[in-house]
Length: 311
Image 1 (cartoon, rainbow, N blue to C red):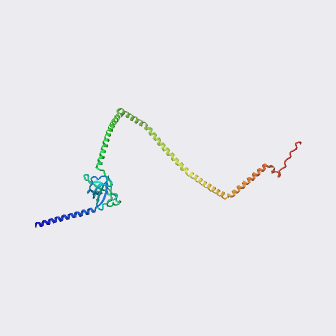
Image 2: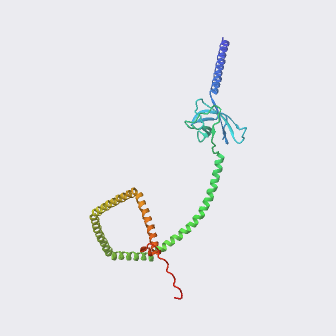
Image 3: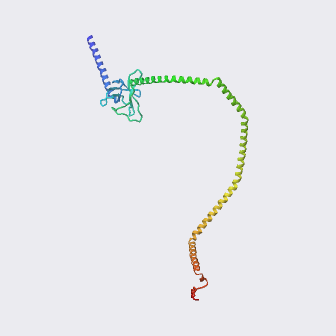
């Protein structure tokens, strides 16, 4: 009886173990088959290893599946990772090293990118951003410390010089603010007060004269305004008459131009006749000059004979 119960118990335990193993294997296969693979490259991996957590916008979405030097470029590290389906990794997303806490290990952090950026296909490369390693930080801190030490030494030297200059300045101030200088300043202020008291009546008188001149100038300007106002209307009337006279002259000139254009042919003929008459008069004048006798005789007289020499 006990042997049978033992066998049944062993069979039940074996079946339960087989069942749990099958469930774990099937679940693990389904879980791995549902992940979306991606790849990224970094110069410094900071201890990453398979199983390291992957964050998308601070949310755990997957794990690192492989870390190894890149075969084509040994200076960078190839990091394979897988994330949950539906994780909106896009072309603007950037992968970089991060940490969940100060004491925690490194994780791969992926930024959310941009809303309108296209989604990355499975197996695509996510752009990476290098982070400063601890060694680089230590080297920079050492360099800063060395620079600070040099700066402190230089400042100490300058402080000594400044201290000496400040002492000289204080000494000069003590000399300037001594009893003798204080008396001189008091005398200068007393002279200034007496000068102001002596000039105050004159300043008041000048102010009164300026006010009087201002009033006179105001009266003069008022008279000028009245005169201009009185002369404005006669001047406007004269300008109106002058404008009318100019308009009449313009009309008269226009009429003359019209008459000249209308009688231009007759005027040209008259001018031509005057020219011909002038030519004829010139001919007659020349003929009279050459033959003045023609005015009283029709024929030219005969030439007189020369008398003989004997007579």
